[in-house]
Length: 442
Image (cartoon, rainbow, N blue to C red; front, side):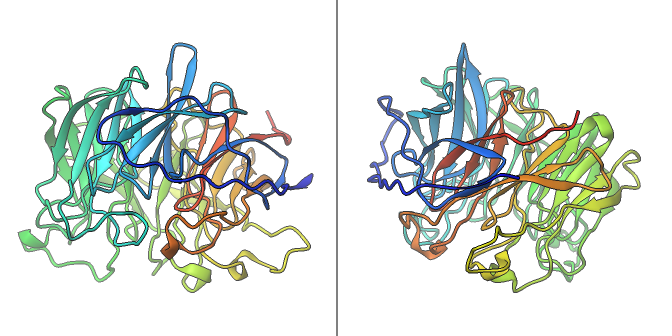
């Protein structure tokens, strides 16, 4: 593989003040790519810090012949609309402010509706938010058919106004939104199905929780403290796949949304603090790609995993292989990524397979590894996944949230149907736009 080291361009943007209403921003040229990056079989096309708003979770929509990336942020409530029609010149064309003092870092889009999570802000300096002050907990629905003129449709609030709110929710289009919600009387987030047939008045249609979570109902809590739904991932027929933290991968039959039924539960790493964070589908081959999340810095906890799982029989999933652990290129002052500093381990995949603008799962899988950047894998042989490309950003040029530290922290990845890759730098960096240049097996 060809190894490339980034240049020395420097550029720092001043943070823009949060508008009180929808704010259209004038088109601007792409920001210079920050220095210090390394890559193998990857072309770096563009970068944007979105007027001082580091990028976190991302989704995509289109309007006419324009391609728009929608990005949530750690440091402000709201979402940036980025025109990526020309991936070498991304333009922030709109900022949509969210409710004040509210965490809005999760976003999903289908049928022209953007579903955004509302929740308790983190208690971190640099965000300008305070969890001890009023915030909103639930979801907000926004008409995004015209990304330059978004319109709020409605909001739904949990029955636990001082709770976490909702987290990484899934909207595949149609009548139902699938939530990871902190509801009153439960220990940890549970699965809630929201009916948005009237988006101005969303209503709960059903719920499911792992045994032991309903403490108000008399259930005995599980000994493991991290039985917590991270997110509903996708629906395959009538089957919903859930990333359920230390409860593992949970598959439910939701043919009756009022009464979801357990089909199977699969654990991968005993005693891990976050056993299953992501489940991404390969529908054609009846496989799913499953990974934990590295939540403890410098590898001071159990081994993380990224696993290929056979779900040809959803009642009896089984692991067939593990993704290889990333290896630093030669010549660096550390021999492994655990010694680099910060968090090392898997986080997000190119998982929004239901989005019509995403590259459908084929023989390449994309996975972010925090300080080890983005890794691209050849998964043509399900028994032997191989790394075929990577990109690792340089250190942040500015600490937007100092408590996150001066570390590389690649968070989310989205690959559009044109083949362009978008990867976010979390709390400290913007969005890198890349293109894989290595081999692809047919």
